[in-house]
Length: 102
Image (cartoon, rainbow, N blue to C red; front, side):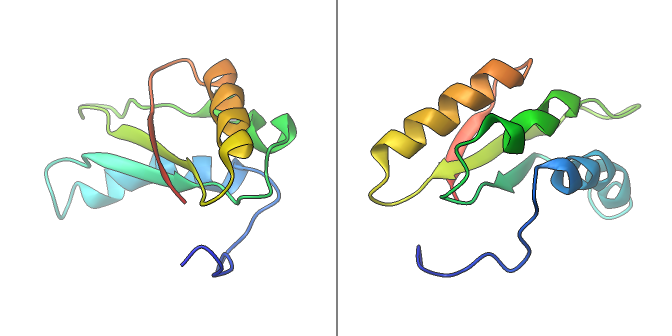
């Protein structure tokens, strides 16, 4: 699975952040709460510029409990990249997040 390409790759997290802000509101009509949101990160992205839009990520939605955020920072055979991606995300995000595979 790790050799599969991204179906929709973006230059930064910008679009993912915009979508994550809308998901809880859109899903509220179907389920009472969005439990978590997963944001994948391509293996080759270890540059701070890609992660910069994470600073705009908000977990709050009016009247809703915030979803947990999981970042897809883990890739097979990439220990140093994993550490770098985690360090960058920790430096930018103002709240705790979960770590997941891409």
